[in-house]
Image (cartoon, rainbow, N blue to C red; front, top):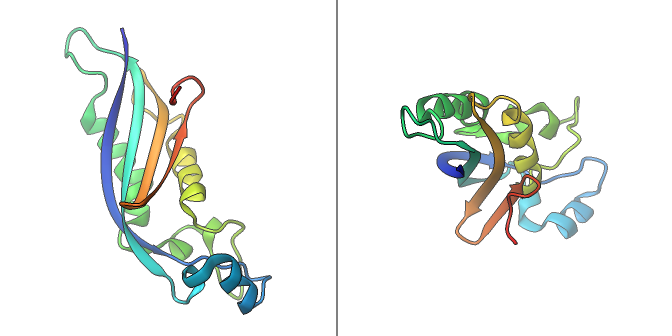
Length: 149
């Protein structure tokens, strides 16, 4: 019987919404206070959803120690207590090398997916991610056939 398991992780990180090719006025118009330097932070919650078959010998869908180690190494340790725009090159903002993406929840979920997909412990596959920056705003990605509806 295939099942889906969810595991939550927490980390704190800061980010800045800014397009260097835009004027200060355009950045403020598009991103509001999120464009104020040096940025602002959130206490994020990340849910990682995996699917697979229960191992009849252990009764587990996944070895949580393996899953935790993977998520911590590939995501949490990269972001926790850091500034996303400094920690991840594709979100960089600066005079020398500009990143190509604004570190919104939507783009961060895509980045997390790229860090985890294809790296899952044996027997499970990544089927969903939910990243909440606070109680009022979250972004969710579902693999085909694993979402709502």
